[in-house]
Length: 183
View 1 (cartoon, rainbow, N blue to C red):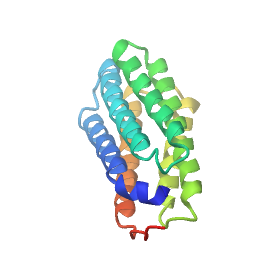
View 2: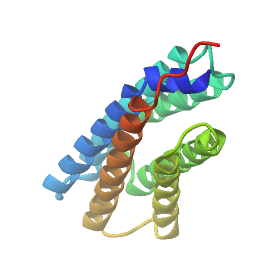
View 3: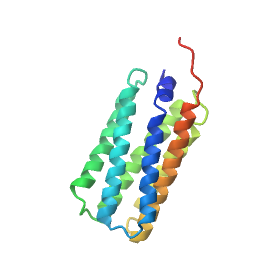
């Protein structure tokens, strides 16, 4: 059953959330980051997120019929992370498109997963909020793709911190779910 798998892997969204918060705090602490440095920090965050998405997908493959989809999302995240490391001299516009594409993908995935879980657990709305935060962030980036460098850093940092806290809350809510009797 997917709920038992989620409960066993409650730590995956917690670690993803911690990585997001660390990225956000670093971006706020060093607002003068160059685009190349921001690309490297973003790449590290997306790589970590992708690795833990893959871990969650593989760990849940016995009970989640859609584990392959989650695996693909993790692989895409890793690819985007590697692309950012491969070309750190990337332009700001390309970075914005990478980040927006990743955030849209993550947002849609989180909302779809929350809808799937809504009848099985309480607190799925944290996952919906994570998805909405991701989609709003992506739309904001695409709506005005050339904001000032400082505004871009603050926008990315704010998104990462909000996403991170929601992920941690969701993970601990999963951990607190009651264990279901074996059927």
